[in-house]
Image (cartoon, rainbow, N blue to C red):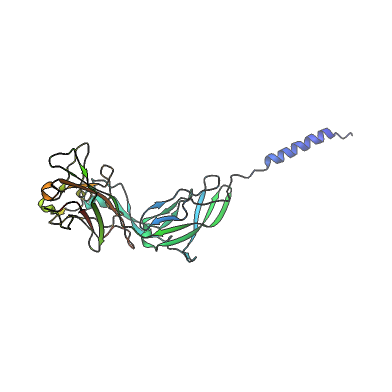
Length: 324
């Protein structure tokens, strides 16, 4: 029988093609260069801080990231950033309608949180208010990254730096003056400052207004009053940010009690701001004009506690006029 090379070669080609088709190609891609844009990743104790996802060298998504271990500045493995602490949380949006301790309590609660987390998909870094309970300093950490292609361990991928608590933030301080009986022309006054001082004591916010000599304007006698707004330009005073307990107005200050276990304070915005606006009438000062101070601030936890606490004294110093 005559051997047919033509048919043999055709059969061999079919076999090779079939083998090539049956061999499954590698799926996905897992890069070699992983890093964070924020390195070190810096967060203030007691505050929420987040990063963008890890830079993944074009790796196939979804990319999973797992925290393996954390080391302190001395290179020792530590659980300081990964053990859980009880912190106050929001269970719902707090609004001005939550105006009693009972209504507010329905919107706040507590839960167990780690100071440091890594989002399992994409690797975003997250610092939580539980950082109030850990030491400041520099930490580094190892991760595992994985996707459909496989997994890799990356040691010392980045550093986390915890900085000291900053329990208050002055957002705005501003004052102007205007002639009595008109609301058209105003003069900005530069010599106006505000201090926020925390003292050991009950949860109180004390708001004072003092003149260029340190003398205190008397709210009880009407030397400091709310500044009236309009429907088009509403204005607020701090009482509207602290409705939970009765306001106390005495010879030296406005005093507000605030609830226990609040993550921050104030808890909500009014007209997209935390702004409080007051007026010292012309009859109460030597400038002989209405003085219009306004301020905005927020309070945060201090070292070793996870909620706002203590007595806060907010002093508005009118450095350009004296009390009459």
